[in-house]
Length: 110
Image (cartoon, rainbow, N blue to C red; front, side):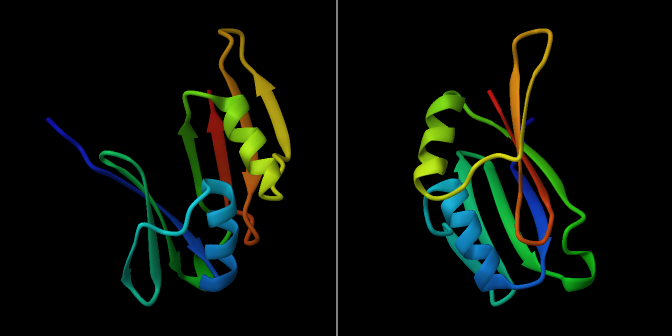
């Protein structure tokens, strides 16, 4: 079974969120399904999207895993973003947390 993943994050302001996610992910949105959503294709069958839903903004959580966490963090830093926290689990997996302007939690692991 093949599954395409669309992970969504509720935001208040599309322009503000678009700018922040462009800096986090290193590129503009891959496509715009409508005036309230933007979608970033982060892998062949995996997508992260924002949707303007003010009452729900700030209550979303998602974790993405990258092959090169240090490279991702260095690139994000060049774009003006630093994680708010860092963890290393007993099995050696590392995870950092970012929060977008609405407070949504975006974990990046590697």
